[in-house]
Image (cartoon, rainbow, N blue to C red; front, top):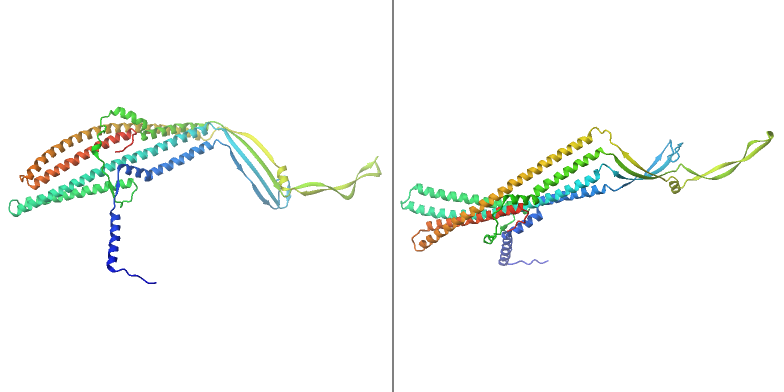
Length: 482
């Protein structure tokens, strides 16, 4: 085999291309829109999967409670070798020999009445399954709300990072100006130190803003079940298109609508109904139970024989005398019985037996266990009623708070909009004066920073209005989207 060496220049170029490709892949960022973030979270979230597994288990429990109304069928074959003196299981006679015995039964029974427990259990399991479905819907809705909240937080933190960077730029310009003035004796050392402290403070604010951004981005990745090292970019929606956001709500009307669709309240109500059904199940222990049963059976023993006929033995037995004359005896020939092996299937056929009957069990005294079960079921029902009321009260507090929050967010947005317009007008004037040399670069950059910050504040306030409105949409059961 001959090895072909690549010239060093070509090898260098090829390596450079490979590393450039790897670097490009490493730096490639995945753009995540809000809808994509929600879809990925719903598809990958493990809590939703766990809730779906619980739902599937309760679905099987419901099916089994329906199957419990059907008859059961069991077979019990048994084979044994018996040695020494024992009882032939076919004839119930004592014998002293080795016996191979085989017997078997097929049994069935069906519950005709059990105090309504079977029917009430089906109803309870159906309610529990509905509760699990509501719980799954609750997990999904909570996840969507959390993703939207975190998504908006990431966008807010992005703007705060930009504002912090601009503050660093302005503080550095201020420090440079202070240093020059100090060098020519126009400012004191205290002024210079203050300018340096301003730069340090701006750096700290930038670090804090960057940390907050990275934490919010990490939280968003966790909701989407992404690896922490995944490089993503959050797509910023066009906030100017969100002009149809409703901000005026009647809290009482929102509450009435939310009570019909809110998963937390529906979950509590369904579990309350399930515990109420549990009382009826427990009360079923007071009633007698009626069971219809039937059985088929047969047995086999190799000790049993079958009469095959008789054969003369050659002996004659005297059975009497003619007219009492002992000289004239009455005789008969003697015969012996001939036994053959009892065939297996014939023996099973001959021993085949059937039975059918009805069993009645009447509870008379069971150490108060039935009464205790009923009392515990009633306590669980009362506890479930309290849980439902707590869910209703909590929903009422959240709705009223959400209505107040969206109103406050709108007022803040209007206030920040006015501030932005004022800073915009001020910046336009300073920019004109800066262009003709009447304003220095420090004042110009300070005005620009104030304009940018007021714009970020206005955008964030608009995000907050949108978010507060989406929270109300969430409690009204409306889909959350931007």
